Length: 234
Image 1 (tube, one colour):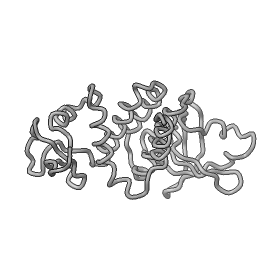
Image 2: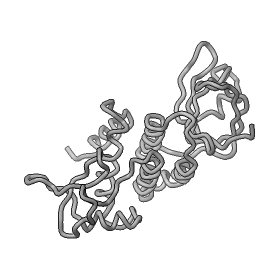
Image 3: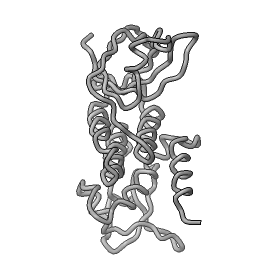
Image 4: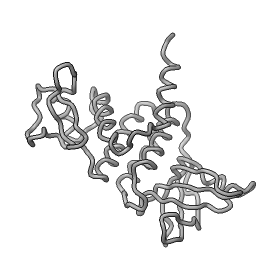
């Protein structure tokens, strides 16, 4: 096979000197593989196989768990720390949790690669994450449909809540604030980065991703909450 552009999503030790890894690749989506000898002291592959570092890889195998054959660096790792690092860990955990193995998602790979350039810049983190989340939802046919349950346009002056099961919106019940229809109509136009929409976009993508993630909480999200709590004035 031709070398595949890839990024490491997850790695854990396997036996004495190997590792079980998950990759996001350009043409094959999420790939699970054994990286033999990568944990051995002095291994060149050990220094290359790091999160947020662009790679070229090949593998062999016909079942879900492949055997990594070739691994080469194709650039420097994104330099992430603090909130940027947590955002990167969130992106990795999200893709590991929701993408089926060997399911081609080239558009998700493209947005992930772009995110690696955006995460070091604080004001670009949230828009980059929303674009990645939306790409994931579209790839899995789970993205929001900006219509009500009767397939009608959303009212600019109405307030709505999202129903992930139908991927559509219903009028907010009494006692719930909901999201204003004007903001939802703006999101429908495709620009999820317009000023004032960041909070709405985050709430919406979280609601849409919730059925895909299930009941198990994201560890990276818990770490973000802890970081935010430490930053609040006492």
